[in-house]
Length: 565
Image (cartoon, rainbow, N blue to C red; front, side, top):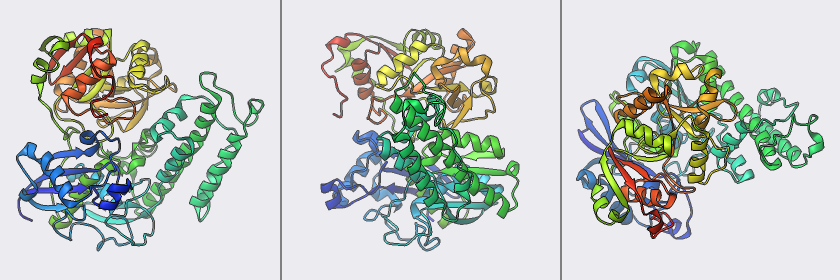
């Protein structure tokens, strides 16, 4: 392969699909790479929803010309265009060669899930070539844009890696079960997961063990979940203590029933993954302590499962990108293509901040000048005072990739204040029980959370130590757990220093973090969108690329909707 720039794209082009609104690939994205010898570098990763304002962007381009124009517009920030690419991969009509995908190597396994696998396996290429790895791509369902009408053995993929030698095979995935639950309850998978752990109600006499022992366990599981749903639909208060343990009065009866269903679904999901892992450990005679676990696909966003697997098996390391869902497919497509064509490459995903950057601070002195009371350089001590008083908006550097805010596109607050959580959920228009995530200094995580370890991409759930529970109510789920992001100084030095200052002032090395977006919209991408959001929400202090900006005259702001509405 020649040195230079490469582009991997998870997009779709079709005139009729564009006109009819048919969806073939959601969470569309593309990645810009640079190769120099054996060294591969990710330069920029674009989640299209951040640019279009369409959550889970699944819109097809109507023509190749339209797609090329859109890509070139975004590439221009690097003074590049498609003409500067050595090769383009991933999307028919844009791709410039035919040897980048997996159809010839793995004709019975979806390319979609091969890409998922490689997005996790090559988070750290040194581990790929030196360690043993069990990899699972456990998703909802693959797209068929590249694979066409190929008949798969199964729609999900797993692998065993031994010092760079890889064996790929079909596996089962609980992801489709969560998609079905989403359709049943008209709630997103993350909301279902949160509700499952929030309510204390659960069904009695649930026995899932026989399900996994059947030859066609999928059919047995689906039938069992259908029975559970019917039982819940017919549930009455008189069944308390007989069919279910109790009614949790903090929630509606419907929410209690939904939580009961999700608890069963979660138990089945974990058992399915455990069955796969147990079989692989046995087949390859592996010791978990000497084996890494790599996960990708939408189900890898299930933090309680990730933590359960690490706690039970004590794997040597956990490997996953921040964009484990389909928003990371161009990442996996690129890494698979490099691996296939080069055989050996050096790559490391050492942080999450490969998204868009915006330095348009001039807007503070032009169109938004009537709303700016003051502007000054960031001071960590002042930051502490600000978040204690009220949540602040934090916009810094390049956006994080993937579906979660990891400290560069966030709303931040006081982890110790119940009022802070209430305000954050009002700002986000979310249910009162929805959790707010903690960002904790990595060196302090074990002092506050049980069985904890580094979790830089917020993919793990830990239990708060009992003696600390009352100290951080904002960032603690109702069951005493938290979806934790750990932070090292080299990952995000500005935010790290602010949390250090918060620790010095309060004794708590943890702040509250939720994504910078409104209900139903993507994470905010531009400074103008930040100011629009803060003015609509009544937020007085915003931090923009190391600058503290205090807003006023909120009542005079002329918009009450996001800029892209």
